[in-house]
Length: 208
Image (cartoon, rainbow, N blue to C red; front, side, top):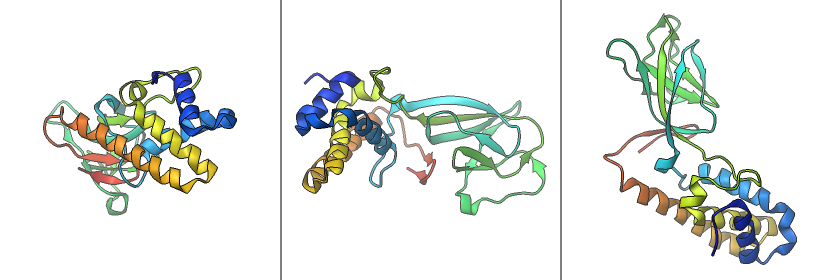
């Protein structure tokens, strides 16, 4: 099975599903599977190749998240003194202080980081986070997820094919394979990590 780029993925989805009549929909199925990698009720993809670090300058209490942000591993203030990690609070628990000062807590709402108070000066915030892979298209033929974990894409797209076809039996089969492939990727990746790390997700709060 050749499965290293977007065109080959479409061919494999077509062959496995026996749905040559859905050629114009295949790109949509792939896009839907990418969304499901990062947003499902069972287990989302968080592998090392998705990790990156960005810095943001504070301009107020609300800061825009980096492009393709999925979930945060840590958020730190970089200052001339001790600096230190900002502590996460769920949105409903966040205390919104009316005065200015050095931020101590943060939460994530939508596509923004919200601080617990208006910064009393300009701070640099370092965010270590999981970044979604660039979506596959005819112009972007591959990415690190397809290269390393092609079964995630294949099973995810097949799940979407059979949802579209209203074939519940095949949906149940392939969604199980899809989630299993994600769990396998996460488990394999964690073997190479040193120690546990908390992850603050865009929608799911804190996970271990």
